[in-house]
Image (cartoon, rainbow, N blue to C red; front, side, top):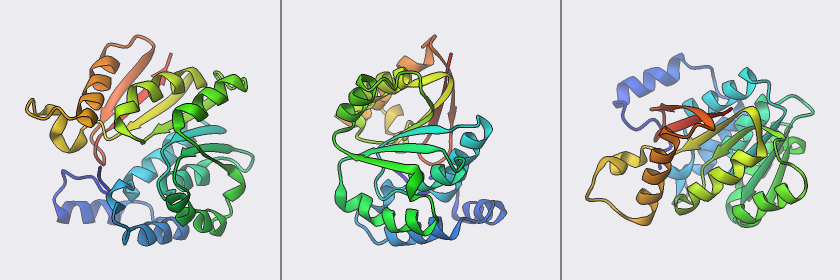
Length: 220
C-alpha cells in the first residue's frame, strides 16, 4: 500500500509532482482530508490518479468499474475523466470511508457519474453479471482486499469488454512479493495473480512501477 510512488527519493518525487498537471481542487481537497486517517496510505497518489484518468481518456471509456474505493480519490479521478454521460460503478463495504469522498464528488460535480454499491465486492460483481453487464465495461480498477484479488480479476474480466482495460494496484506490494521469506495470505495472493497474468493469453499486460506497482491488462 502506498499513497505515492514509493521507490523514488523525496526530491525526485517532489519534482515529478511539480512537472505533472495540477490536481483538480476537489482531488487535492480529498487527498488532504484523507491524510489524517489512520489508513491514509491506502489511497493512491496524485501521479497514479492522473495515470488512471489518462487511461480512461485514451480508450474513450464511458463505463468504468472500481473494486475497492476507500475514501474515493481514484473514483473521483476516473469520474472526472469520463464524459458527462459516463458512469462508474464503485464497489466498497465501508460507509465510513466512502462518506469522506462523497462531498468532494459533489464539489467536483460528478456525483451523478458514480454509482456506489456498498456490499462485498464479489457479491456486487456477480450481481452485475446477473444483471446482464457482461462485456459492458470499458475500464476497471482493482484495489481491494488482496486475498480475493484472483476472484476479483476473473469476475472483472467477464465484465470488461474485449479491448477494455483492467488496472490492478499494489502488484509490487512494497517489495514483499520478491521476498521468499514472506508468505502471508495477502502477499501470496498478489504473487499468485502476478504469476498467472504473466502467461494469461486472454490479456496483454504490462507492469508499471508507479505507486506500489500497477498491472495494466488489456482484454483480447
